[in-house]
Image (cartoon, rainbow, N blue to C red):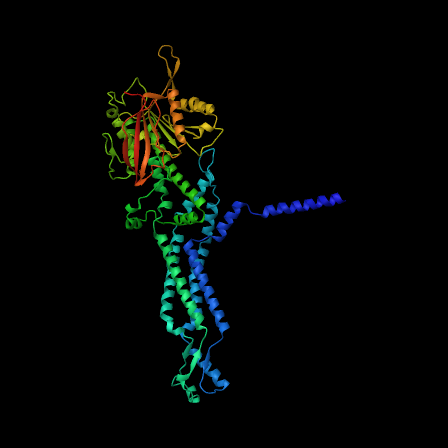
Length: 620
C-alpha cells in the first residue's frame, strides 16, 4: 500500500513539473514577449514620458499639501461674529491670486503631455506587434552548412520590408506627435510665465470689496484696506511652479532631439543599398564603410532625403536597432545581402546571355551596355590616380584592372603581347577572396582585346563550416565557376581537402579532354591561370591560407609560367586610414614583384585608395 501511495505521489509531482515546464516560456519567448508587450520607446520619448509622470506627481503632491496646510483664512479688524468671519472668508476666496490654481494647471499639462504619446502608441499597436514579433524571431547565427543566414530569416526581412516600405503613416504621425508634444511643452512654459507671476506667490494678500456690492452696506464698518488673507499653500505652489520649469526645460530638449532625429541623416543604418553596391564594387565587406562627414553637404542630403527616414520600414528598423542591437545588426546584414544577391542575380543573367551561343555582334553590344551600366553605378567624376609607373586615369575597379593589364608589357619590358594566341591556350582568370565578395563577376566585363575564356572565383568563407562537403563547387556557366571552402583548412584533414580541391573542384574547372589527331584517343589537358587577383582580407591568420592555395596551384601546374598576380590592399576608405585593418599580403617565391601602384577608386560613391601589388610568376 505504501508503494502504491509513493508511486501515486511521484506521478502527481511529475505531472505538476511537466505542467510548469509547459507554461514556463522559453528564453526566446521571454525576449519576444518583452519586446512586443512593453514596446520600449526611444530614450527621448522615455524622458518625455517621465516628465509627464513627474508633472502628474507634482500636481498630486501639491494638492496633498493644500489639504494638509488648511484653507485660506482672512484677518478682520475688530471682533466680528462667526457668521461675519465666514462670510468674509467665502467672499475673499474669489479674489485669490492665479497662483492658487497651479495644481490644476500642472494636472492638465501632464494629461496633454502624456496622452499624446499613449494615443499614438495605442493606435499603431498592431503594426508594432507584427514587426517586432517577427524581427525578434530571426536567427542571429548563420548556417554553417551554407555560410548564409537561414531562408526563414531572409524571408522575414523581405516580408517586413515589402510590408512596411509602402507606408509612411507611423513615421508621419510620429513627427506630428513629437511636434504636438513640443507645442504643449513650449505652450506650458509661455502660459506659466504669462499667468503666474513671482510676486503672486506671497502667502498674504489684501481682500477688497466692490463699491457696488450690497454686502458693503451691511459691513460698512469694515475698512477693506485692512483686510488681509493668508494662503500658506502658495509656498508649495511656488516650489511646484519652479520644479515644473525645470521639468519642461528637460522635455523641450528631449522633444527637440526626437524631432531632429526624425528628420536627420542615419547613414550608418539606412545605407544598406549603398553598402551593398560598395561591397560589390570594392571587394570589401560592408562593415568597413567609413564616411567623411566633413565632405557631406547636409542641406543637400536633407533635401533629397538620402539616408533619411522616408517610410515606416526605416523607422521600425531604427527602432529595432535601438531596442535590440543584435537583431538590428542581423537585419542590416540581411538587407545588404539581399541587395547584393539581387544585383549578382541580374549580372549572372546578363553574363549568361553573353556566354551563350548566338549573334556575336548582338552579344558584343549587350556586353557594352552591361559594362556601361556597371560603370555608371560607380559615379561619374574623375578620381585622380597616383602610381609609380605610367597608367591611365581610372575611377573604378574595371578600369583599374584594365589599366594594369594594358601596362603589363611596359612594366615587365616584354616584347610578347599578354593577350596574344599561344598554342591555342585559353586565358584563365582566378579571383581569390577571403570572406569578401571578390571581383570575379566583373572580369568578364573587362574591355580587352582578347577576353578571358574561363573565370574561377575561389572564396575562403569563414561562415562556411560544412564538414560533409568541405569544398562546394558551383558551375554558373560553361566558363564561370565558383568554389567555396572554409578558411581554417589547416585545422582539418589537409589531405582530404587537398584531394577535394585538386581532384574535384579544380579539375572540374581547369581540366578538359581533347581527342588526339593520331589515334583519336582522349587526352586530358589543363587550363592554366594567366591572371590571379587576391582581394582584401582582414585576418592575419589567413596569410598562410593564401600561401597554401598558391603553392597548391603551382604544384598542380594550374598556373601559367607568364601569369600575373594582382593583390589589392586598401589604404584609405573615404579619407579614413585603414592600414591596420587589412592585411598587407605579399607572396613568396617564385613570384617576382613589379613596381607598386596606388589607385583611388570610386566604389558606389565611396572613395577607396588601394595599394596594388603586381607580381610575375616567371622573370622576363
